[in-house]
Image 1: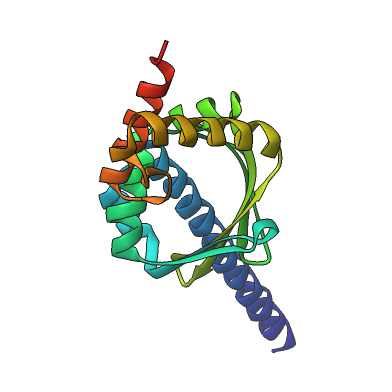
Image 2: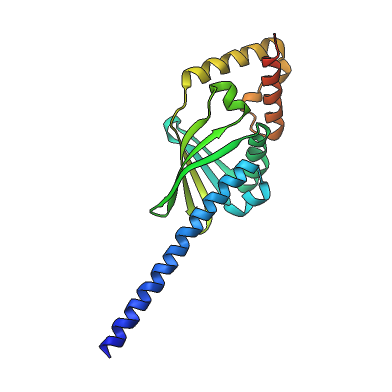
Length: 190
């Protein structure tokens, strides 16, 4: 009788371990799909991965934005897509139920302002099988170069194309297109 109880105990432990492994794989798969959706600017895939609301934070800059799923997908993702982003996951692992990923991102906007890709640590938090929060830590942000290029662009646009003023803070698809137009006009000013 004791052998049967011990045997059943080990089978139960094995089943619990397998179930926990499935959850680990699921969160990693969800995170991988999230970065693929970002890279492809795939709004339908993104909708399946996010909770009804999403909080994005950059603690170093005391930056926090709360999006509804709809706002994130219809506004921010479309804004991001205008610049033709390229996201590469360099490392990813699961720690205490959250995903930690090291990511490289480059696009037209980042190349103009910083002349090299962003490297970030991203922390993805989950509620059940949906992403509820993303925390970003910049690893190589060159504030001096970014600030200088940003100031020069904004000053030039203000003087030469005031109809585009406000593009820098408009994170919608239309705002992204104005941003791209401002970059193109500035680059071709010679």
